[in-house]
Picture 1 (cartoon, rainbow, N blue to C red):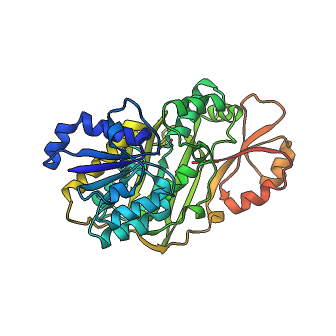
Picture 2: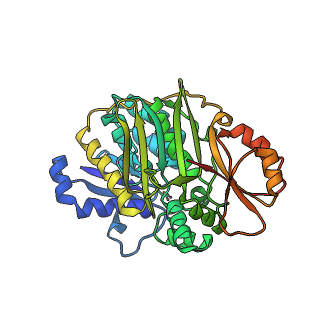
Picture 3: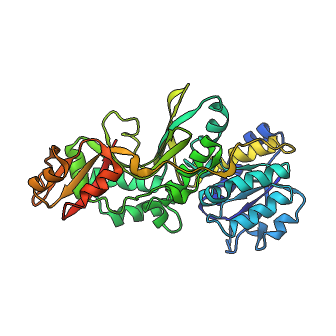
Length: 398
Ligand code: HSE
């Protein structure tokens, strides 16, 4: 069976490697060898075995009737969207690792695939190599998923782990994550939380069966997390993690991406380095957690190849995915309740005037106070913080 790869970067080249390394075992599972016959990329790859398979125009793939399966690993919404739509409309199956594309156009591409009796799959778009899309769509389809709590960005998890363990500098650890091939082309998407925002939008859409617009999800990244915050977290026996969460509230969901201070014993506490984990709460399952390699070439390619095999086995059949483009309005994020850790240069009397009785945290830092509020609504916190003059950090507790 012939396949094509669009985008020969970190993931696309990983897909070619996985298909070659595991060629025989994959053939035994599909019933025939999967052969990559065309690779779309504008760059040259002198000396690379795929050199002779390179094409510059996506229409060369559209017009090749032998190619039944297409892998999209280009990243970004355009031109990936135009190319994927053309592939589906010409009767080719498509798998993608591109969360920007899936979060933005997933419902529409699923519908187009259904109309053309092919499949649009995207296991690699969330959690890298961790199976999470298929478990939600298949294994847990008899459950009502009431909560999703995930560490879904490998780059930031790697950075926060290093910063906590080694007191490393933000820019140095970002460079290391990029060198390992974890980061997006523009790492702003990782460190500002936009990558995690798209991933929780995808998971929430699948669980809700409706479109969640990622722009509606309040999102904070890790750029404001400092070495001093890490010292306070240590004093509190907590770790700081970037958590993408979504909770069912009545007929809708409340979703947020933000750094959280997790206590020892929390299931996500020990998820370190590039590892990701997604914890689900189902009304029948109770809690379940999916853990593994969340980014990088081969783990992510492994998930893409899983889709290729699934599509090859369903070559003449569309596998139903319930995600329609009828948008779901999320719950008001101001109504979410948390306890908050705050650092301020204001004195204790100003703190107590604003927040009443609080728990102070001593991390040996002079010239400021650190404290934890009682449980309160996000909206009330936002008002009270205004009455302090010099707030240095504000981090939610789990
Ligand atoms: N940049 C992403 C991450 C890649 O660091 O998790 C995997 O989606």
